[in-house]
Amino acid sequence: MLITGFQKSTLLDYPGKIACILFTYGCNLRCEYCHNPELVISPYRKSSVVNEDEIFSFLKERQGLLEAVVITGGEPTLHLDLIPFIKKIKEMGYLVKLDTNGTNSKIVKEILDLDIVDYWAMDVKYETEIYKQELEESIEYEEIEESIRLIQKRGKDYEFRTTYVKGIHTLKSVKGIGKLIKGSKKYYIQNFRPGKTINPKLNNRNSFTQNELESMKKEMQKYVRNVEIRN
Image 1 (tube, rainbow, N blue to C red):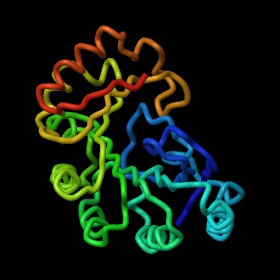
Image 2 (image 1 turned 90 degrees about the vertical axis):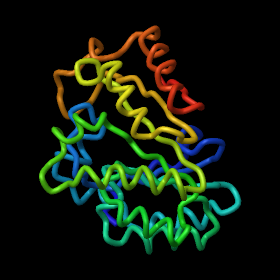
Image 3 (image 1 turned 90 degrees about the horizontal axis):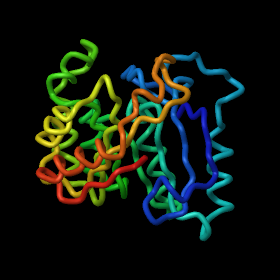
Image 4 (image 1 turned 60 degrees about the vertical axis):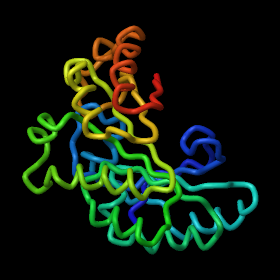
């Protein structure tokens, strides 16, 4: 696993659990509003790579104190050794949360078959029409739909989420995404926050107002009962 970020404690990223976060390098999407450009478009520095022995030594020391490990990125499913890596974490007694963009449904299915992820968080980026425009030729849109279906049907616990960016997303986006994830357990509306992004021109004008977010929530509740806003 090529891990270039390691946060040793978080109370926010795994619902109700004390967790650490591992950031994998590399992503097959280039969302202009991504807040982790150093994991996506910048060449990684060898000095930033976190040795797996260091991670497992830390997890061994924290057994009984730390409850969960969050694996995010970048896109973790790009890494061929993701599954044995998760298995090793599970053998230590930890819960595992996996963040994914859903572009690799084969790996999603394999992980579900092995029952080694306790909580899934899938980013649903756009409505169908925009997905098909934005995805590179090497990525099949059907992978997105299949990952959604698999997680809905077989995920122990999960959430879908979208970061809404004014100028990219509209109320029409909410309706389109709602159709994609209809009947899901949980959905989070995440407002764009200005800062370090792939597209440096994005700023606070690309954030939605609270009233606009509430309108989005109301629309999404036609498709998903449990909808929350993350600012």
